[in-house]
Length: 159
Figure 1 (cartoon, rainbow, N blue to C red):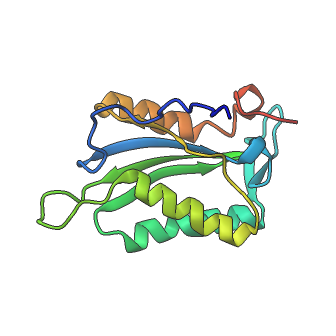
Figure 2: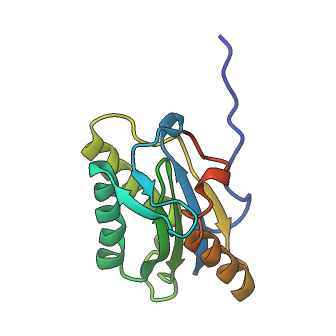
């Protein structure tokens, strides 16, 4: 029997429980466009995002993180048709309690929303980028802010 080897997606020897900022991208399974629709694209109109029912559940899960995890905050996010981007601030270390790890939070978000969807919602794993400074943070913030405007040029775009 041949086993498929999965390339590790985490930065080797990095402690994901340490305080910091993380840029996370999670794609739907097979990049199905089921989370939202982008409307109002045109010469003068700025696009708007209209969430589907499952997109609303993803929104609720993001809100839940901000309201229920002490020291963890989603600073910025966007729910695109087939993926989400998040900037997560993890400031849970240093107070004597075990720090949360970013991938635990993402696992909980994916698990909750998959149960709401009733089928496999997300691709396995997710992409993360450790934000390394203020310039990096604001470049990512701007990328998220303009993501809907550039949807047709996005590497995840599907008609």
